[in-house]
Length: 327
Image 1: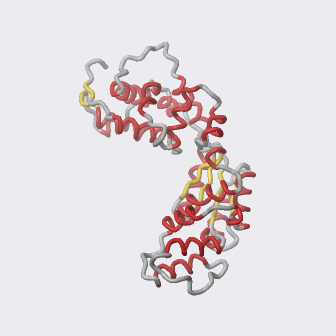
Image 2 (image 1 turned 180 degrees about the vertical axis):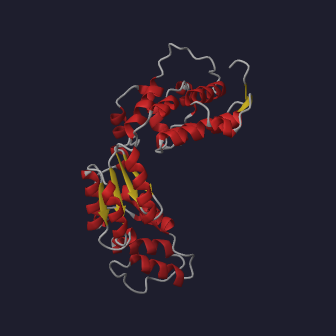
């Protein structure tokens, strides 16, 4: 590749590539996306079209992408005797997560010089997957490192839920009960609706080796029935007993959050919140107070700020967390 001309990736581009390669996403998809983007954007000569990359041998693509990354790191000459410890750890981890065929193994058998790339990662600001990547260089037990530094990776189980509220608040409620998702390798995947939960489960159940915990709102019984035929012995479905996730938040916690959100612009709550109807109340509350429409993500973040004690964990939320722990 000595005659190849490369436009080096910037530090930011390298970090973005590392981040995408180590996220929880199907191996083939993320590696192809990253490698193709690097080749298309940073290889000046010879120039490839996307259609050519779509039919390129995976081993050749991995070699070319690694060459560009290493050039960018000023590490274009790689000692063949070098121990690619991190590369081996990443390959082992991806095979631990997913059922991968021989073609995908070619993408994982790359010569990216992670040892050089790790120097670009800022420990204070990096996402957890990059902090975990950096920890691989130590050669220490990965689970011990995860438990010690709350790195989340390597993952042990995946929760598939309907919305962003669960993604934000489940880890916080679990922490109040003494169970840290990041220390125990629990990943929360917000699918964006009950139908999307079914699609996400169908896809993951075919390829993943980890247990899947499916959390559905009370109105998703038919979706639960769709999932059951593909449920593996290691998986579990949990159907909420009342409404949506917001409906099982402790009412005192919701009231405290609303007081916090409106203390400077609004009068006290006009009436008590009926059990099981929190979402309806919140929608009317935000509308009638002349505020913006009720946004679940924003409200969940406010609830998170106001969480302080395990007594603010409702019985059903406690049951959900205990079911996750038992999976």
